[in-house]
Amino acid sequence: MALIGVFDSGIGGLSILDEALRQLPEHNYIYLADSLHAPYGERSSEWIAARSLELCRYLSSQACDAIVVACNTATAQAIAHIRSELSNIPIIGVEPGIKPAALQSSKGIVGVLATEATLKSDKFNALLETLPSSCQFIKQAGAGLVPLIESGQANSEETLGLLAKHLEPIQDAGADTLVLGCTHYPFLRKAIRKLLGDSINLIDTSDAVVRQLKRKLEHLNQAPDRQQHGSITFISSKDAQALLSMSQELMQSDLSRHTLAWQLECNI
Image (cartoon, rainbow, N blue to C red; front, side):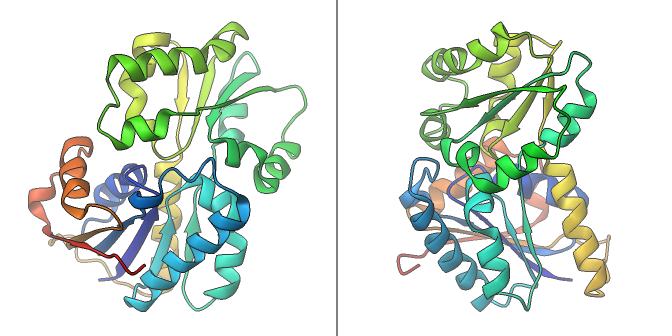
């Protein structure tokens, strides 16, 4: 049984944790939300890199066997530096699924909804350069969406209106595939379907991220015991009890099967 740290700027990484609990329920988890400083998407790359490393160092100090940087922005800006500084444990990042989107799009027109920091990052644009030029990517920053999701308004009329504005250029371009390029955005699936219908293909990378985590744990010889469910500790830099409440509201996993704890960390 392993102890896995999952870090995000806020509640977005709960989408990754949810998938991890589906595939790997037997392990113990620490979910760390830096909600006091969310969102990261509009902050400087230097700040994101420094803060992300600081939080991953904290998870390492808690004896985590692996860390998932469950934040697209933090992955884009900081993953290489984090891996260099914490080379003794596996660090798994997330990135927008533009490669599978390009393969799945029948029209060759793909919308990418992500944070400004992700879309401007060298990592994202280097990945974009490796894909066929025949595929057109409509990049759109989802400014303002993360704070609404963080405040529990994923399905509110205000969120629906803002989301409609962000999706308009993607819809106008005729995209048949939409990449959810922020771990917060899977919680907007219902709203996206309401606006765009069922014909558009939605791509998020939760499954691929957890499969990569599973491979890393196998290399560590962490033998699973599928008969048991591990513990989950929710840690927040702002309000850990609110984080736990949001997890129970947003996640599909049956959290009652796990031992739950929560704590506020003001010193991270």
